[in-house]
Image (cartoon, rainbow, N blue to C red):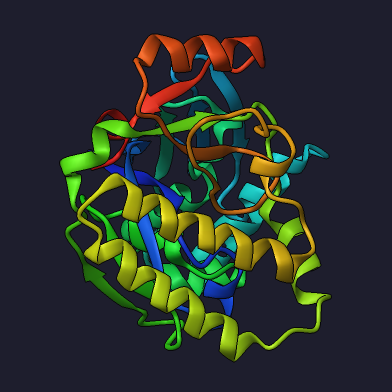
Length: 306
């Protein structure tokens, strides 16, 4: 028996990075890139779980076999993390797996794993769907985080996300003015950032979070109401200033992109993964600028965002 292939979307966080953890409304963007899961169930062989993870080129980056007690001789960190996630899935729904059958789980991502678009969050969504459990509870019991990435995983357009009720967060579909989005690009910095490190730094700081959250939500409204590129740029630049001053991290427009002509906004955990860049010049000029900085992954908004 073959469980139908499911796909979960990746994510980019436009606003409220870090402060979404404390109840700020965040504008989040599901990506066209994501991860799929196929499960083959077989009653003709001895009970076991065989897990295969494929990259965008269909090369295996994880291949592990387990008995249904989830015991395996592995010291590999990724394998151990997967086993921990599966254990929680079974604990949350112990009757989902038939102990007389074997299961072959095959996942495939369609993006580079280093990009930080949600290898873990899409996995959480896919497993939660298969095991018929609440993905936000599974997230809390495993990787942790705000859950905005879980919300993005089954949406096909921008959302405003709020996790004040963490097991049943508020998710509102929104319309962003796309009249100027031909001038919006997402660029990979080439430096994979671990969000847990960023969250740890954020938690170590003392700040007036209520005031900051209010300021961020004012910026959200400005972004939603912006009709011109200049208005959008003004809003994201103010957002950068607020995050930078409170996290005590310099803005990329002050460091790596000091000589850039448009606006630059960090996304998610500052310091790595993707950034948003606005560009009102010919695309070839932007690509040459990025090439000079050894950055070769650049997506127009419409190519990566639903």
